[in-house]
Image (tube, rainbow, N blue to C red; front, side, top):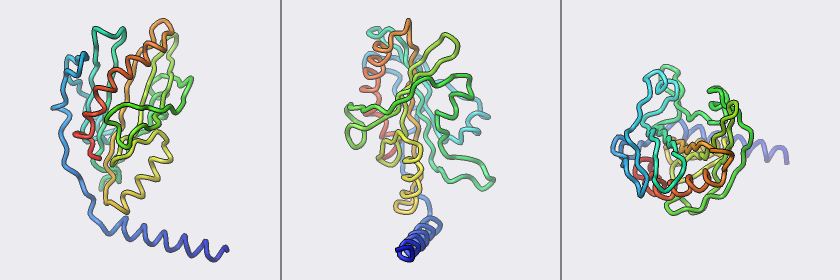
Length: 218
């Protein structure tokens, strides 16, 4: 049994190494976020926000969307971040291009994660139909924010970091692709009203999610 397992691991490793290193990475064509609409349904974003170059370099992001959307029908604004990484295999000079997990970045920016769950998101346009995404409550002093995020990569929606890493290795060997994006919605929780924040998220996500594949290829 042990010999069979060792043989399987050896063959699997050889298969992966052969495919992992012997192919040229594929970068599918896509739209650029500079063309992402500023009006979606009743929601409006005043402008595409820009990050400093040093932050872009630190994130290793190829293209990104940062917009604060507001609607006269909803009581809270929604911050939207979609960071697209054309490749997640690193650079020749040793730079990091893999997507940074929000669970690591949020505490570094002064926000504490006080609750985190995977929840089923069932809205039109989500690759593969209803999918689990991560719902996180964060706190800084008395302030509270609700964050929904997921990784959208090569036709997958993934909430879990370890599953994302496994899919990355598999798709690099099988498809010669490592491209993908972090999709994140951030909403203030006003007077403790999580229900209103959840409703605003779903309202906007229903409008935005069907647009994402044009910028993050399946």
